[in-house]
Image (cartoon, rainbow, N blue to C red; front, side, top):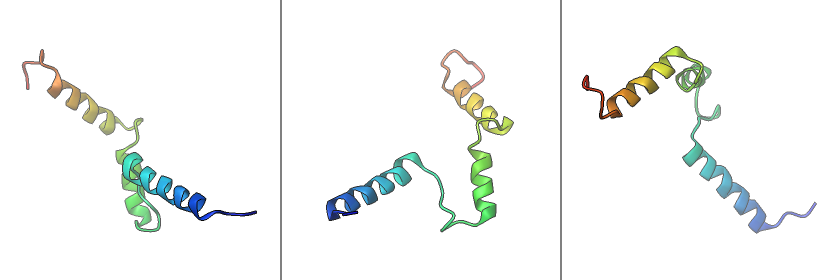
Length: 67
C-alpha cells in the first residue's frame, strides 16, 4: 500500500480536530480513575448529568423567576 505524505498529514489533522472540538480524554495521558470520572460526568444516563442540564436550562429561562 502506498501512503502519501499529504494523506498522513490530513489524517493527523483530523485526529487533532477531533480531540479539540469533539472532546474526550486519552488513556495515554490519563489514569483509569480519571477516565472513569470523565465518562461518569459526561454520561447522559447519569441522574446528576441530567440534573445539571436541567439546572442550566432553568437558569437560561427568562420566564423562571427563581433565577
